[in-house]
Image (tube, rainbow, N blue to C red; front, side):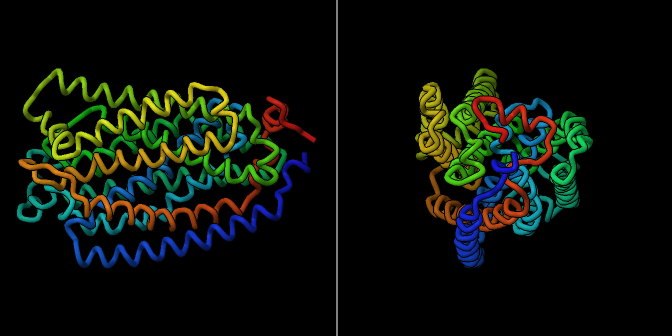
Length: 403
């Protein structure tokens, strides 16, 4: 087993080079972001929110999918468990990157603007949508998420250094309650940071829809990382076609679940045809946004669904990595579609190209910081979990080697 778990020195060298590039991109993006904050503050904050939600979603997805793997097991988790745990740790820098959103509440949220001139809440949602309660909830979310990430990584590290299976048993016992807690926190944060952009509009599916989208993006990101690492040991030994096929099947399941949630929300609002609900969709299906909505249907469901139906597309590293990169890109488009139209004039909604451009640049900038921290966590421990009670069985499954 020691042979397969020994990392190739070229892996560290490649990661170091990529980390330096990511730091440069992140620094450049933050400099541009500060300039955009000064020049176009009204356009900066919605654009920053897009990038923040994109990378935070992948961080939380790292927590969620790690918990899922501990709960259900499976050989698929062997390939991406360490990448997932490293992504989970990025909740820490994302907590710091939340500061611009806290400073820009009045620019982002209509209810915060109303609250600035009144001691009451906003638009009929008092006392939930108040600035102080909003910030308290945000702090609580991050405390819970950071604690979960630290617990997962701490117990996993303890298992690396000991053959005693107790840490793995603790991880399995905590997985179920952890998923419930993460689901609740993710739902409420989606309501706070996303749905309250349109405070008169409510949807009981919105939070679940965003959580599923984040899970899909996280799985896509982990497939890209696994493909990057598969060029060298030890990932080259364990990223077998069978395990890649399992990851592809999971990604296909999330694609279908995202489509189901999105369609359910649309169907319920369309059939209800209530004046307080339909403006949300009208704003996102006019002035050019209708083509974005159509593109999401085609390129975030039909295209990946069709491609991932073919087994050979899931068993080859390059093919499945390309599909995963495409899904990540379309997920970003979805977040733009969800956030940016809220900043447009409801009477004449149109695509604000400056905000789209700023969203792209800021997403790349935040991504540079995210990836730099991600590689930092990834390099600290072996790429394959050590002393896991199920490790030998997982290595022997589907042609993996245990010697």
